[in-house]
Length: 345
Ligand SMILES: *Cc1c(COP(=O)(O)O)cnc(C)c1O
Image 1 (cartoon, rainbow, N blue to C red):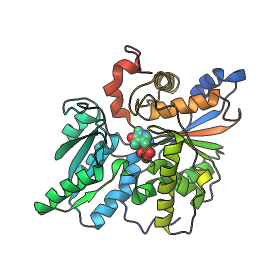
Image 2 (spheres, protein in one colour):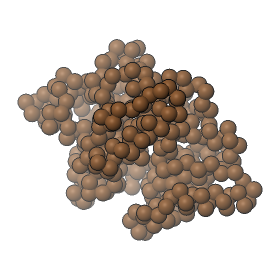
Image 3 (cartoon, rainbow, N blue to C red):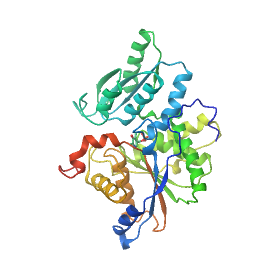
Image 4 (tube, rainbow, N blue to C red):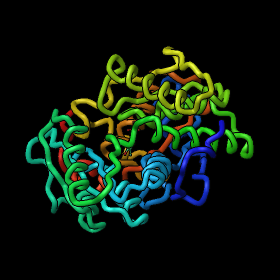
């Protein structure tokens, strides 16, 4: 599909690696029924630019391209206290010479602290212009619009980026990823049977799905919910995928049944550690030297491990795990990841 007509900035100068994880695949198989399990490949989107980058980098290439095309001098976005998306948006703003403001949603009262480590430390180091903290359940768009009005009153022009950068424009980043993968499958002669991806604000899952269907890549995608079970998550992903397809204007209808997600791995709550996440983070670190994060990729990989142990994959399947990044928040959860304190569930 033709992405060249959309304004885009480039924050990564290479295709992120597509790597086999042989020692992890072996350890996983040993813990599966009959000692057989799938072969796991990893798409290293944790190596994207705006270091330490992640899936938000791909969305921001198109979102910031759009902001600059509209003449904006300020980015406004929102997220949870340890938001990777806010941090990567701020990096993009710094690189482009734009101002940047956050609205942080405190789903747990008092959970945001300017002096916390991980992403919060980086907000300060990168020089965020302002942080407005609102309580859980607040109307984030309204709160961001209020900041945009203040920017306008001061003579500036703000561009509002929704949570996770997940709208039609942001989703184009994962259409680009689908096309990058298609090329890599061909060049590396790899036949992938299924892709496992995190499913949160849904730009990654929805964008990748639109990209696969639009490019006739017939590989099923399974989303692992990081904050919602399928009944709530799948309609969001479907809406996002259709919005991306509509923006591309290629006459693509996203079949509802192409949207598949799995719940149960994010509990007890978004961002709250569980035992399966700790196992996944330790397992990848100790078999592949690969670091996962506690909020997203640890739980997403826990989903992949759980599905493998339930024989969801055929034993000879090649399964691709999309590593979406998130490493800075690992430092905010050191004790639980090392097993010094017990996870909540
Ligand atoms: C935001 C995020 C996700 C979820 O992606 P969405 O596009 O919001 O669904 C997954 N992993 C990491 C590390 C993230 O920061």
